Image (cartoon, rainbow, N blue to C red; front, top):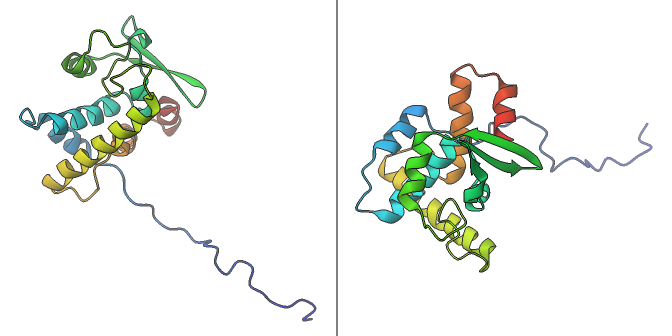
Length: 177
């Protein structure tokens, strides 16, 4: 009846379905990363190890890894909080291997992402995160991966690997917090 002027209020609103960028790598790539000899490249090795640690801990976020304390590991169970929820991860030898490689005895932290306790810890975490992701991207390019390798890839890769093993989505979701 033309009582209202058409102004197309949703002209710039996307309402379709678009595939998101793939952020996971197959399990074989995670195994390939684990087997890489990076002993002469300590910064790359550390970055790779942080990616693997995240993968081993069900895709734990970098911020949660940075603030893990040694006391969070008790009786072969690692406990941490994600979005207000307490999560428990069974401690495995592959995790211990990484922690042993980078242990700083006087530090309260499990991993050396924050190296100076009590000194602008948030900034230390952010700087370490950027450094780690920069090295991971380099490793990914060297391996010819089509997915830019970042710490977040571990999160998606663990979920994809779990799904490929027919683990129910509800269990994967709960495991990731």
